[in-house]
Image 1: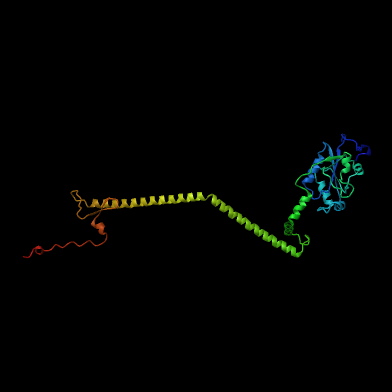
Image 2 (image 1 turned 90 degrees about the horizontal axis):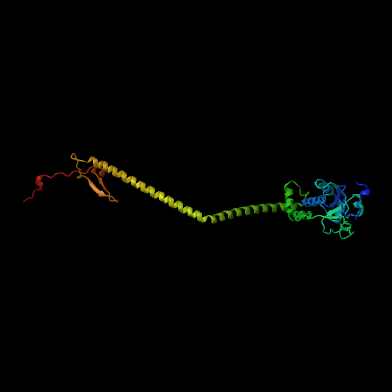
Length: 313
């Protein structure tokens, strides 16, 4: 610490150039979060060479003027010590800053956001009223969207879920200050909620499938028509090939039979052949042997005696 001779006067508008500028920031810092860290970063960067002191009020003063905290004062002090922007933590900081406190810690400037911070102790309208009046106040900006009150509000809003979370992690109902009936009711409600979530998940899957079916319906119908047409075409072609093969086979058989019936002089013996036309107009033959196949050959006519043909006079 510097000697009293090095203490700046309230009327000195310029920061010291022969030593680090001693900047002081204070607060409760309950549930220390990145909003706190950013404000301390701003305080640390107010000058090129800054020594940042951070004051934190104890539980007694905080509970009296602000209300109950989640973390106790020892936990809040320790959280500040682990912030990289902080050079020194001052425990048991006063609720309202006065000249005596500034001199004791040789503080050049006090850093905080510029909004009036109500003095619940009754000493004034703003706890930073004094340092603002003597020109020793430096403004920092708050970080929107994050605060200790916001975090607590989130927990209160989803209280039952956080209670069940801790019950599932092994905390007893007594540790969570729950009655037997309250615990059972919470467990039943959580089971019902999980069941509802599963039902909703299945409904969403069904809706997705139905939506996909509607989008691709025309494509599916077109594909189905194409597949059916292709099948019919292949079936028709197969039937045609089969019919052609059968006809060719029959013609080959007939040609072979015809060659066996040629007479020695090269003429065709067609006395015993029968001819017919198939549906296509092609001339085809069946001889007696093929016509009757394995059946018995027809009986030859018996020649009657010559006398039987005579006409009796």
